[in-house]
Length: 251
Image (tube, rainbow, N blue to C red; front, side, top):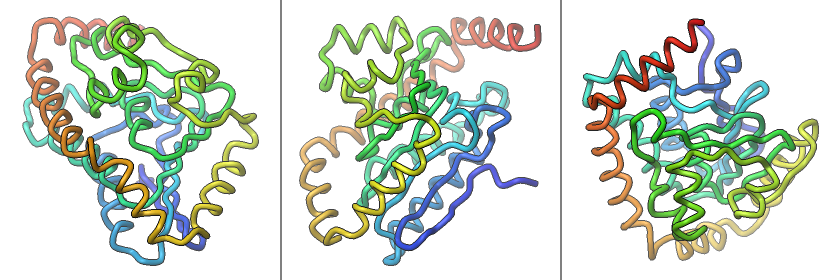
């Protein structure tokens, strides 16, 4: 069976790769767990200075795998697996460089908020359709997006679920840089390699200082979002929305 998350180390840079390109890297619970394990191991591994997070194929991530989600909806551990991944990514002490392209849907967008640098291909398309699925936003996005963008823009993106492209993502500060898709990995690796050569204690201390004032609040918000997300899975709205989504997929 193909590993759905890969970890490839080159020098002091570790690439964590979502490896389900035929499904646009939609995330299953097993993938969340594998990614969490890789990040936790990288935290302790002194040979790793920087992590690149990327998706195989033409998309970064189409979000949660709805079929896997529906099958796991009555398992309370399912939500905790996702929340553990988000906590681990948010608290990761070393720089995380994301290389994103194609679809970045739901958590495919919100996880970018916890990366330190985001390099995007020209065809990036972000969307957070939580409300359309009868759910609520996750990943600390209800704290971070309003703080970054103001309430009205955050409401438009998270409640109306308006999609936005790479140019808008750059204007909003969600990504750092847009490059042609064929240069995406080259540029992300170049920036990661540069970070890996800096004095590492200074890098990690600086990242800690930049995040420490809001990190405790962020973890609390992620827990609250996760609880409400889990509760919303059982709502009539979510069941109706999921049914419509799955019927649309089979047509």
